[in-house]
Amino acid sequence: MKLIKSTGTFSFFTIISRLLGYVRDVLIAVFLGTGSLADAFFVAFRIPNTFRRLFSEGTFNAAFVPSYSSLLSNKKKSQKFAENIFTLLTLGLFFLVLTIEIVMPLFIYLIAPGFEGDYQKMELAITLTRITFPFLIFISLASFFSAILNSHNKFAIASAAPIILNILLIGVLFLGNILNDQLVYYLSYAVTISGILQFIFLYFFVKKYFSFKVSLSFKINDKIKKFFRKLLPSIFSSGVTQINILVGTIIASFQASAVSYLYYADRIYQINLAIAGIAIGTVILPQLSKHVKSKKKEKIKLIQNKALELSLFLSIPASIALLIASEEIISSLFGYGSFDEESVKNSGKALFYFAIGLPAFSIIKVFSAFFFARHNTKIPFYISLLSVLLNILISIIFFQEVGFIIIPIATTISSWFNAILLFIFLKVKNLFSFNLIFIDRFIKILMSSILMGVFFYYVIYFFNDKLFYEASFKAIYLVGVVLFGLMFYLSISILIKAFKRSDINLNY
Image (tube, rainbow, N blue to C red):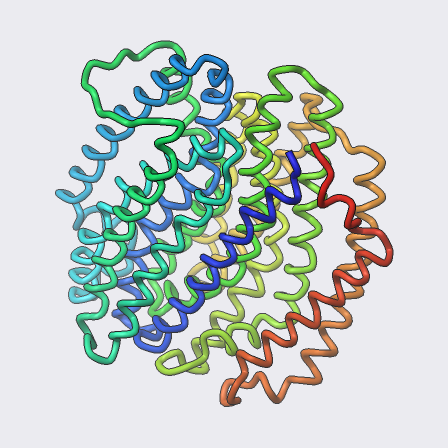
């Protein structure tokens, strides 16, 4: 496996999806801004989208890939295992969605309790979430197909599927002036339809490896039991960042427009997280699982060090850039139409504090994969549980005094706590050790990132008048500034050998 090439393939389609997601969010900012309609839609969209991230962004892989990969040498056994999982997953998802649809008012009260005092906002959130919630069935089953493709080292198609969601939503948003207040309903229907289309799209490619059928005559053997014992802990532990954000949404619902501020800030750093954490964690898992099974210690050490190195190479400079220009970035990307100057400032503050945690968000994905490859989901689960409890505690204690900004602060603190504990347990259980190449590269990555930060600061300062809220063409100037910073970082990295072009073709 060529780690960087495979990650690059996964990342390419992920970036396309995230860029289309940005176009989608700009249009949402223009037509909805940060008012009541936006808050209600973001709650309705956040819930199924959080489940999508929990299932599709490496978390379902964590439980499924190691078990399924170990059976690939016997096609009949691997097919039967996958069929049983598919059947149980389909039945479980159907009854879960049916139950939530019936008790949706109670569910929304639990997810957005701050809406209770606003009857119209609460009713709208209930209606929209009822429309979007069936998305969960189809996107979870689509994630099952993605996990099968990933087990066969086929990453491109699985990473391309989310593009469908953004294309549909953008298509609806172009009708924003015609639809007016009805826009949020059409957006909600588009979410569910996109789930159905992603399911069909992925099945077209997965049928080469797996033909699904739902049969009630299935047998729950030890392999199936083991999978489901791993599934919930892996979803919770690998998706801890998303769970923390969902917790933040619940608490933020008590402050007007706060849900929207956090949503827009979240959209920015998620682009880097998708590449520096999710893509790497997803790509290394099948190969790492095979090496763990065959006890190839040197290969395991090499992959783990390279994965961590690549994650830091991508996340540290991104974190520095977001810290330097958080408000300018929000203003340039979303500061149009109904998204006013106050919204820019508040979303910029949230992005600043999320940026401090960006390397931790990425490291969690990579470190968790080290455990998952060994069929160990319990340790990441318990650490994630502590992390979420810490997040809730900090948010609740300081929310009244500090307001919504405590949510990104709490998320960042709890994420660094999570990453550090994962590292400690990896070392204690002798599951990870640094090699000399990593230590050398890490020092050089820090040097390159600091130099890039200084350069980026002065470039932002030079173009400051072009990035104001009222400025025209500010998005174009921002793209130029980011490209300048990226080119400078890559040039310095190659010059001081923080990154070598030969790494691209290196097999792991």
